[in-house]
Structures are given as structure tokens and as C-alpha cells.
Image (cartoon, rainbow, N blue to C red):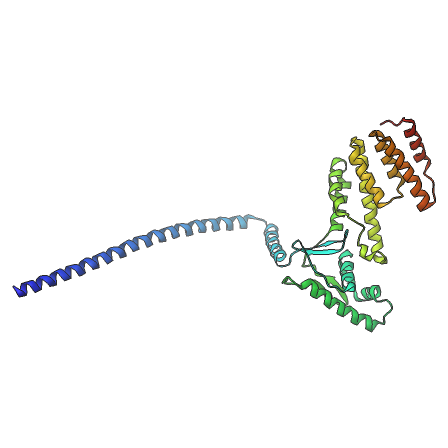
Amino acid sequence: QTHLAGSLDMLIEEYARYSEVQQKMQELIDQFVEMQDELRACNNTLSTLRSMLLTEMQVERSLPTSHRVHQNVRQSSQEDRAANPTLYAVCLGPFEVRRLGSPITLCSNRNGQAILRYLIARPDHSATTDTLMNILWPDDIEEVALRKLHVTMSILRRSLQTGYDVQEKYILHKHGIYQLNPAIPLRTDFEEFLRLYTLGRKEGGEAAAYYYEKACPLYTRPFLMEDLYMDWSFPLREQLRQIHLEICSTLTSHYFGKRAYETAGQWAAMILGENPCDEPAYRQLMRIYALAGRRDDAIRQYQRCQQVLRDELNLAPMPETVTLYKTILRGELSE
């Protein structure tokens, strides 16, 4: 009996181990099935991706070579812009250079900032060493002026690089020429102003008014007032000023023709803010106020015109202005 009991205990232990092994085997089988399902899903995904890739390759082969090159250039250009964000220069207001919408803290060296403004204003954004020395240190001997230029450039470059890790230098120097790096995009408010003005002149009519009204907010003050007394800045400043006056005059006439007298008056007043001696603008304001039923304001505009011309130019109003004034006094002005 003792032997039989021992055999029975052994049998029970073996059965327990068998059951445990069987359970583990079942768990392994379940894991294997799950892995098969996952492999099947991965295989389906790879097949889909392979089909998409083959389709794109076929489309790519069917495109003209020039189109494929353009796509590669565009992708490369986008990558370059990400690495070298566009600089935006404000020249029709207090001078400022922005990167990613934030102003760059430029060097406190006035000559350094003057060099940057000069390079930005140039059509090709470049200048020779001799030109910069003659502008900034005309009375110094060449050796001294050259040393000052090198020091100033070093300070300017450092301030442009500070605060942002760019792949390219902002200012290049080669063969005696300093140039803003063409690899770093540059936009300016005055070039955008000129672009909108050109579009307006080309389109005319309502489209011109649209473009002009987008251009005018860019012109908050004359071009680079920081360099007001520098000869190099005068031609472009005067060109932009005349264009601004032309835009305001065109918008005055545009809204006057639509009988939008209040808006027309705002544009005419803007002309006088830029040029207080602009007699045609006074006549426009006189007509606007008279036709809007503001006879007293029209008369005051004539009186102001009369005084400004006398004080500033020692002149009397033109006969055309006097005639308009008398017509308004008699209440005979008509549309």
C-alpha cells in the first residue's frame, strides 16, 4: 500500500507538471497567432506603400525634365529659407531689421548701422571698400579708414549673427566688395511699396485704388530719415516721396468722383501733410468741403493756402485757386 500511495503521488505531480506545460504551450500558440496577425498587417502596409511608390515613380518619369528640376530647386529653396530666415528691413519709418517677425538688436555703432542701410538701399546690395570709406571717413588717410571699416564690419556682422544660428554669413567680402549674402532672402518695405505702386499703375481703375491703398500704409515717413543729409539717399527718397504724393492725389480724385467726400478729404489732407505748399491739394479740399456742405471749412482751406504760400514761398494763390474761392463764396459751386 505504501508503494501504491507513492506511485499515486508521483502520478499526480506529473499530471500537474503536464497541465502547466500544456498551458504554457497554449500561451505560446496564442502569441504566435498574434504575431502572425501583426506580420500580415505589416505586409499589407508594405504592399500599399510599394504600390504608392511605384505610382509616384511612374508619374515622375512622365514629367518633363524641367519640371522635375523645378521641384528639386523648390524643395532646396524651402530648406534654405528654413535654415536662413528672411530679413525684413523697414526704411519708410524708424530703421529696423526684423527676423522671423522680431527686431534684431543691431550694433550701437552708428557707422555700422549706416553701412547696413547703405547696402540695403543699393539695388545689388553691395558696395566697394573705397565707396564705404569715402562715405564714412572721407577725411582719414586710406590706412586709417580701412582699419576703421574692418572693425566696424566686424561689429556689424556680430550683431546680425547674435541670437540666431544661421548657416551663412550675412555680409560677404570678396575682391574689395562688401555684399549682403544673396543666399539669405531680404525684403524691404520700400520695394514692396514700389511693387504695389507699379501694379496699380498697370491695372488702373478700381484695381489701382486697391493696390494704392495697400501701398500707402507702408509709407509712414520719408525714406531713411537717419541718412537725411547723405547725398546717396536723396534720389531714392525724392522718388518715393513723389510716388506717395501721386498715389494720394489719385486716391483723392478716385473717391471725389465717387462722391465719397470724407475719404477723398482724408487723402487730400495726407498730401498737405507731406507737402504743405501743394496748391492743387488745397483746391481739392476746398471743392470737397464745399460739396459736402462745409462751406466754412472750404473758406478756411483757402485762407490757410494763402498764408502758407506767403510765408513759405512769398507767393499769392494762383488765379485758378482765387476763382474757385470766389465761386464758393457765391455758393455757385456745382458737381
